Length: 495
Image 1 (spheres, rainbow, N blue to C red):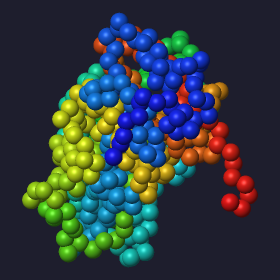
Image 2: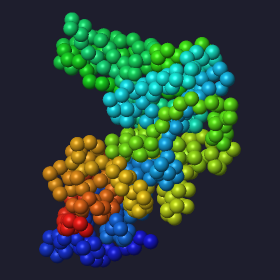
Image 3: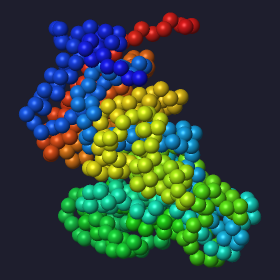
Image 4: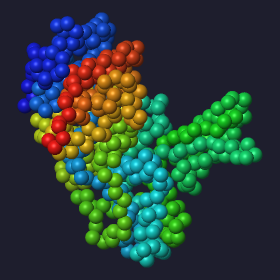
């Protein structure tokens, strides 16, 4: 049961190093003074601070006000997925055989061919590994089809409430039952020794017809404008400067063909003959099980925490949406005759988790997507704080904290914030930003790396005008919390 102890100073509540902040100012008065900067503006906000161990409330302002959370929605998505699927869950993509057909059954894995998870390995390495597995089992000649089953998710790949003017950007990547390279094609231009430009595409594929259009320019930088003329034809306008480009990512529209085409190409390149065509059909049974006629030849697995790392540390929307839909699939499989992961079933799964597991009132909650890119999501600071409190108390709580960005760290969305302050390395949080929204929710640790405080701050404004001020408020509150946690003496050796 979370208790409220706002009336006392923070030092009395938790044994912080300083009984007051400035003169007789308590922590509550300090935060009030920070938020007072917004008086007279149209900014709406909710702020909650809890003690990590007891769950006591040491500060709150508008705790239950329903606000757009931006990417703080990922806290809701990732905690729900862990609570529903389990910390040991692994996305499992299956390669199998039915009679003379080769079969791939998807599980909605966002980590399949993800460059960060693959690290130094090619994003298509899993297909090469499958080819070796087939060879080891003596299946080098496939007389039938390559059957592709992506029915674990629906085919509404892009959320209808995402900004239409940001389509094709990597952060609006669509989600499907089978995914590859974050469902993006990576383009770059380099010059050979004769200074002739060359367009490179990764992963290399003949599935799409890619046509470069070279435009001479006196500019220093070479720039790329990729345009899909149809799902299988990509025209790339290249304005040639004197220097090569960096990598430009463009999302793919025909996701299943993208996966299937490159899978087939890589298998053939590795010596596997497939005589039949690619076929898209359901193999998985309505209860989610695989048919007895399917002989499993290989699997590709991605641990759930690898996906949560990507969703939280770098705020990768695509990973959050796949986690959201996969949680929805699990709910649908148990509540209907035919389960499918959709944004609707993800919403139902999330609401049930909050009601049944956390016993929270969700009257003001509205879940529209898993990443927070939709401006229609509504949560409260209190709900996010209680989700973080729940996660902290689980056996996987410390591992979950490690998925969040760290203030001043070299990686993640907080790398440029709170650097050179006591908060650097001690604030673990999920950032959030869309137009008119700034949010920050997470944990504050002491100098022994023990989580001491949980916080959630949500700010909504009709425009971006106040968001620079809001971010400064967020950072100052986190820095003050870190100072108030204070230095905990190290334990003597042997204790």
